[in-house]
Image (cartoon, rainbow, N blue to C red):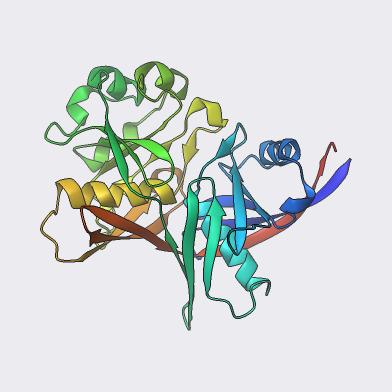
Length: 298
């Protein structure tokens, strides 16, 4: 058996117990892929991040749900960079290139009197149409098709990790959502392993621009992600594409998530126009909660 130290941080919040919990393992080079998966399953969070050496960037992060490895995870990146910075491992370094399965992405750390803010650039935005049944999709969320926004498309979107973006008419619909994650693959015929991300433009916080929930693929081994970084990023591109096309250069949005599950959090999304496309950055922070030891079979 091998003993492994895991750090628990909550991302997209400065208050322990809010935001989105992530496991962070700083000794990833000492672990096999099988051991990483064992640890993620034992930790039980939506994602656990493992820091490993990179020959192409400052460091590499691997992300595991309890069920499988992910290309990219926004909240676990925030937690990992926050851990590395606050534990003194990065020293005075504020600009990093991190290697992920979604590519090499830049990260910038800003320190102020109010704390640490981490900016993470996301991968190139992509969209694909959802051509399945809107009725079946609504039912899989415990809703009816009338709860969906009829004037906006349902789309698969990615800025590093694919999710299904589902525009919802009213905020009150989020309280009655009862996801049936096990039937998502039958509904999402084009991308059956994808998560589902309903969102709307009504918010609890008057300073927020969008509200969302995030329901996991059944293959992930979890049900709901409380505050989601990568999905917030692609939501920002959706907003820039379908809601506010006429902004000048950069659009900054505040995304709220987690209120229905008692994990209030915020993600700042910055969408910048570049020739024939958009660049996407998310900004957030994290907070230390605790550390613990796990035993895994070598």
